[in-house]
Image 1 (cartoon, rainbow over the protein chains, first blue to last red):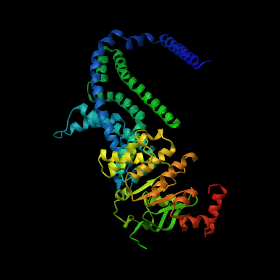
Image 2 (cartoon, rainbow over the protein chains, first blue to last red):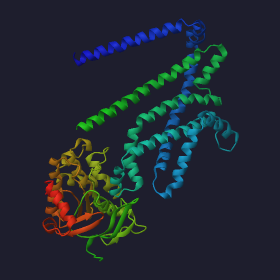
Image 3 (spheres, helix red, strand yellow):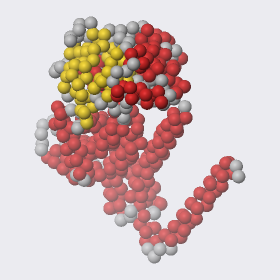
Image 4 (tube, chains in turn orange, brown):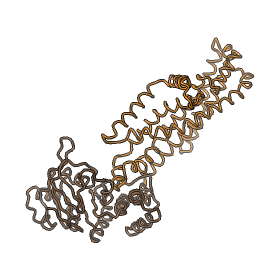
Length: 269
Length: 251
């Protein structure tokens, strides 16, 4: 059989098994004893259409939050990772600081950081310190996610072979110049897929800021649910999050596949 | 034994990695325009010696003087010292994310502070001289091993070093690619470049060296002109080593 034939057959098998799987799932769900009740409470098409515009409006806040937070996370985490990668006894305090930071902010549940900063910081009533819940929500997300992303960067930095740094230093470049021009460009390229993965996580966690009272997509859907005693608005919110996550997830897959292709091409050359 | 004309002087150099003593009292002086070849079995300390001279490894005892300046003293600016000493590694260590041209100009631009046009003009001239002109915009993974190693030599030369260290630069190459790299080094030797070369290519060492040092267990056991070392070695260990090379058909 030709390769083309194999490919067509593969697609047909994948299609058939998918159809069968979902047909069985649908039959099981629809025939479950509580289906009528669930259908009424979760799949109210009329309510879906009515609640979607306000939730979409709230979702703009989520998008704004993760766009702003991501920029600061990428920068701050890079600083943390470089701090932790400094060599030599002189830099021990800086390394220790970065290590304690990572331990602390990866250890505390995100929800607690959001509560503590979101309610605590404005309560101090210091002149000039913003009291906006969105502001402190973003700060909390930046603090928590930077701890994770710094570890991703650090894994990338450590994956660059020491001989690369030796080559850079042998040319007379300083340690910082070697990091900037030789190590980091290679490190960051290698960790782009896990970085995007954390970005997806961040998108979802913007919903936690609702806990501070900010009306974003999740909070808006809670309001709608409370008003109607129907959970359909939650589904509408979930749909919005998924819609924005899927393109990013496929983009990540594409990057990984492209890197693999390139490496193979490099080896053949 | 301080000689003002020496390009490199090493006195009583000791270096250990943990409990493993790799260099045990190395004394070596290299005059300007001299080509010194280090030979000896793997693990005899050749590479470590070169890495110590380039300050890539801290030393435990002794001193290293380059062009009259002690480089192993306290408070020495290691970056400034390294700019004057080129090193070429066994595994090339080119920067894979940069084109050939950027590999060659990185040092001059960032460490010497040259402007881009100036650095690129100098790099192009060097690439032209070593037959790599048409590779200037290629990335290292598109080049053969021999081409990569020639680029690595050009990268070191772009810093206009007074001293060039070559660490088994042909050991990672396929046999048919060795000659093109050795030819480059021969040309540099003919041009008067001061070099210290760790090598397993005995035929090459015999041709190019002004002096050959046989390293054994971290010391220079015997040194002399290539004619003497290769045809009439005095030390039994040198004789044994060379006999093994001859038996392997490599001399």
